[in-house]
Image (cartoon, rainbow, N blue to C red; front, side, top):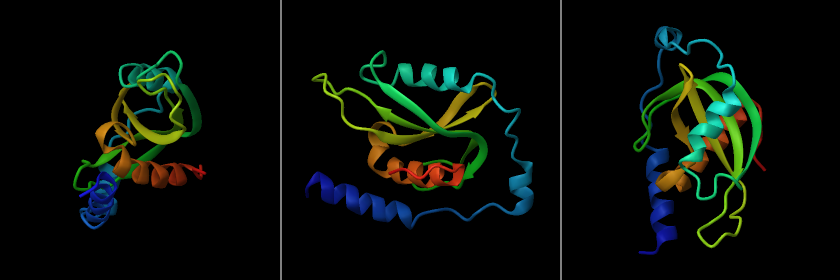
Length: 141
């Protein structure tokens, strides 16, 4: 099976494996904490250790921070916090820019506690990042 077929199957499987949404009471009980001061620095510091070329990566802040809750899925635990939508264009191992991709980072207590759209789960995570960016008020092109 090719990698694209495996990604498609995994994405379809993930789409059908969401947990039940939280009740109003459960949502109200989530503690987002205060709106993060210096959220851009928090995001950049988090990404510094996760990007191939952090000094040359292009990071565009598109929306947030706003309180956001995302229900858990098969490969993703429940995520909530002050969500920030960014577009990232990092260099690959050969030094060429890969193209922009969306990422949503969840901040609580001054640190990133979860992210969608990065690492090994990028294929599935980009779907979550697109949806979360939309909820934050930015439509990913």
